[in-house]
Each structure stands twice: as structure tokens, then as C-alpha cells.
Image 1 (tube, rainbow, N blue to C red):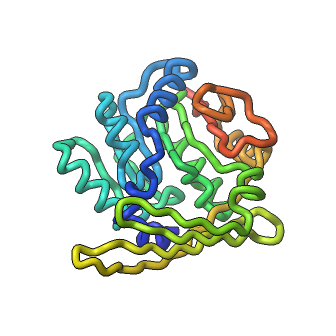
Image 2 (image 1 turned 90 degrees about the vertical axis):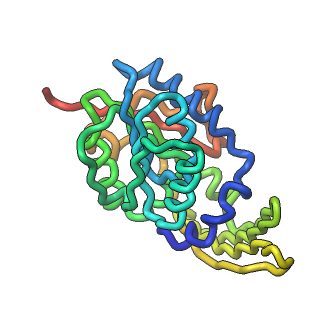
Length: 254
């Protein structure tokens, strides 16, 4: 799961400059206002990548723990946090399907389709179980997934080229016959100071999960679903939604 991100780590932020992490954090905080019984202070981000969301949430006063399986991505995140003087963030290298914390947290977040990177249903069940285990009673799990519609239309067998600030990524998609899994073959070119380019290759894979599967698996793990939305405006999902935002509350016996 980490191979493609090893190739992307050094240029990830340049190629994803269109992601508005401030708007995304606004949405998360609105979820807390609408669905949390009390505002969390301790927050875990799964699949933190280069730390953009972790740093945004930290700047808003949350006590952040950030976990990622890729040491290269974590290195970028730690360097960014250190440079910004954010020394209170706990960075952990680990698999979101097999991790340990020192205690419970008030909320767990996972942004930018990290859940889709879990390609085995047993692993996804394990992830949901762990998240439930480490959440405070009534704590919120907020995550998003790419939808079946996006897999069939945007991903499919399409090829893309992304270029920004001396970095170029050739992105070739290969969708499985059943439409449930897509492999992304990545070639990343980064311009050096002498004008030459370095090349790194990697493969990422995402699994498509339908709404019923996610609902059933969350329920089996002990969650109550607060809502599934098509955007940061809390709009209803529809057949052409490309991303679902899912908010679930951990139910625990006292």
C-alpha cells in the first residue's frame, strides 16, 4: 500500500495544490458541531500523508496524532511540522489496519480516500474495529471514499498527466473487469537543479466499496452512522457523486 506514495512523497503537495484543507477542516468542525456530544480535543488522523490536514487541525487547537504507513510521507510531514514550529504533534509509522495508540481519542479522521486504499474487506473490518476501540464513547469517525461512479467514469482505464512547479506525474489507470478495484501506475519526474529530471515509479491500488457494504461494516464494528454526504455543504448523495463523506459515532456500553 505504501509503494506508490514512496514515489510521490517529495512532490505530493505540489501536485495536489488544489486541495483546500482549510475548507475540509471547516467541514470536520461543522461535523463536530452537528453530531458530536462534546467537542473532541484529541484527534487521530489515519493516512496523514505529508501532514497537511494534521497541521491544519493542529493550528485550530486540536491535539493531533498522525499515522501513515509510508516512511517517506511521514518524513515530509515531520519536516513540515518541525519547520513550522509545531512540536506537539505525535507522528506514528503504521498500518491503519494494525496500529496501537497509548489511549483513546475523541475523534478519528481519514481524508482523501485513504479508506479506498484498504483493498481487502477483512482488513477494512479490522480497521473499523480498531478505530472503534480507540475512540472515546460517542467519539466521531469522519472519513471519505471515492464512489462506484468515480471508479467507473473518472478512473476507469483513463490516463492522466499532472504537472506543477517542476514536477510531473504520469498516471495510468487500470480498472478490474468487475469494476471493484483500480491500479494506478505512476511515473513521477522531478526537475533537478542542473536541469535534468529524476524518475520514480510506483503502483497504488484502490478498492471500491458500495454504500450498503460500508453501512453494514460500520454497524458490525459498533458504529451508528450520523450521515453520508456528497460534499462539504452536507448535500445528499446521488448517483453521480464522486466522493462520499461519512460520519459515524462509536457506540459503547458503559
